[in-house]
Length: 231
Image (cartoon, rainbow, N blue to C red; front, top):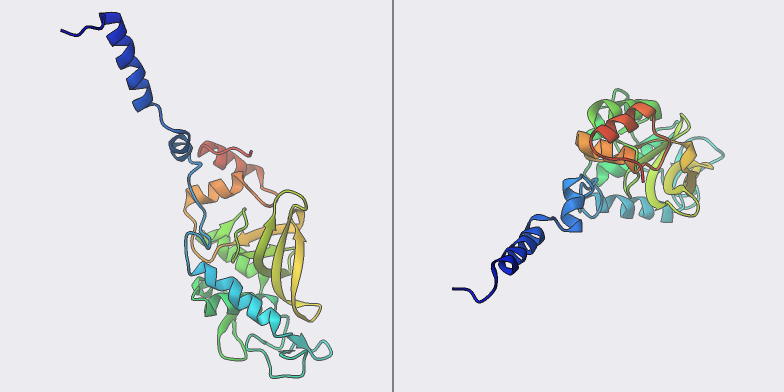
């Protein structure tokens, strides 16, 4: 027979059950949806190949000659860059980088042209954004290696995200000042981010709740219905 009174034993087992049945903070976060992770360099090593390629092109001093839409290496004095399409080339640059990092999902877009080296590239920002929205590649939250569209005619590759002081996204882009350049894009100008891999519906909802851009009310309502709310 136990030497402990019945009331003491009952209190002990009640406390033990509370410890076993109540999830930890990390578990509770996962159960509530907070543990859902968007695709990015930490979850997909291939996404980590995108920025090194973009930075390599940035380092090669790619510039047009006299604004003729033909980017060349060595400050416009070298050979023609492989993503040249002899036209506005920001989308061509971004999708060429994706293609050579192994991401070719954008080939499902409606408007594709062959670049100078024969790679099929996207050429229109609106076409890329519409394709991403229809097919599950659109995101309201930025990750390095995603594309960032702003305004109606420009797109680049997300390099870094400032969510505290500047509320801006740093990107590497083609056809900025007739060259490959680094750009800082205020989040209030962003019209969408495009992931190189498809997001699940729940990942899209989480991106809306933790957005790096303005989010339509309908998307916020869906996020809240999925258990997310903006912090």
